Image 1 (tube, rainbow over the protein chains, first blue to last red):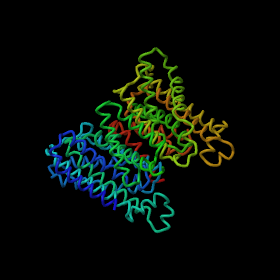
Image 2: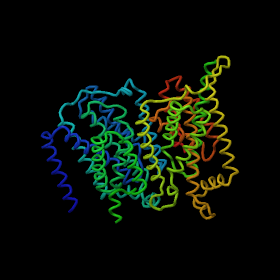
Image 3: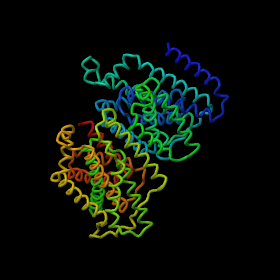
Image 4: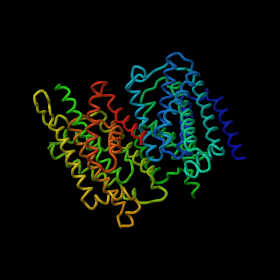
Length: 299
Length: 278
């Protein structure tokens, strides 16, 4: 019953946003858009990073990959819808290849390898400037209307929320949690650890690639920093860990706090954001690794 | 012919620097089994600090090397409380330490970017190169090589013959059992981090005197050191140094053939390949 009410509220809020966003000022639209995009990223991260129990530091690579594929498609004159599809396909293929490397790994090795993958991809994109623009970045014809990128982001957020919410009560979600908690016990009950982890990696990666694919619609410009920067990569990790990994509302709570804090810092301090992010990671690692939701549940 | 010798020599010197830093990280990783993601940032930050100190004060170069080692050791001693290695059921996981060290890396990167917006170097304070025929040998880079040899020797002897060194090796092999024989892992953890970060400080001083440093390279440096530490195995300073030299030579050739921007890709590829096949 509570879940039904939650979804009714979400749909009503989504419709209100979609109808009334043209009447909001540009800054408010940007904040809401940022919340929706970051929320989508956090929800996509939580699949393997939360329910899967892994510290996936390379999740940002899919966002960056999706952004560059979408941008290159737009520059080539491909319609925006197809550009998004290209991003999703690119994310799918890359995650399929990466799953051979990452799925057998766990714990610190997984985290480190995923981080190295992110740095590797960033280096490749930096060094292939003829295609990716290198450090100068890429510009595309601005898609003009706020309506397009706002609507796409809202739709993506709702899809990500639905997928994430389905994990809590679905067979796949329970299998993923079982594999994360006790892989040996899960295998003895017939759950294929490799298959479940591969599927969760692919699912999260496609969602992140789509989020990256939408990113150029709003800005019209991307570069290595905006696509693969360490704060872009670590952001979803912080949001999920702050809110509570592997929980229904954890990523959403974390997103609101993180984006709100970041926005407040930008307007009041304007520097030191990376340091605040770092301090946040230290606090999370030291005092509440199970996030706000975990802290509330334990009391 | 001379240019090839110069390239190889350059690679040996660069690789010695990597090997020197790699030994410090291997000591931390090999004993605590925790990956310290801020290691490269500490290394680069110490290089930036050395450059600034040499620029602003008339301190002899020979004094800066031990000074930076001691400063970084103190930093490691203060910043890494014993509690990080205490056996807490809920939070003593490699993931917590990874998060905290990543947090520290981000803080150091922000501080470094704020104070040193552009790459800096103290190369002008280094002695001039010596010409041996058509081959140039920079004294400070040669000193890196010899310093790395000395550190490898000292570390090997420490791990083999010193009681604390033996305890560190025992900790790696039998984490739970050492508590039974009265060894305090939290004390050992603090010690290995102090020594490891001290070595990073020494590497940073050499980095400032022979190359330029920028804080954004911190994570790349961590990955390079990690690459060597992981491939070399556990607590093997000589192997780390040897692999470091090979990595340096490899990067020199890649820089020559493809350009300097491709050099970091080698260490990433090696680490990913190593992980794939292990």
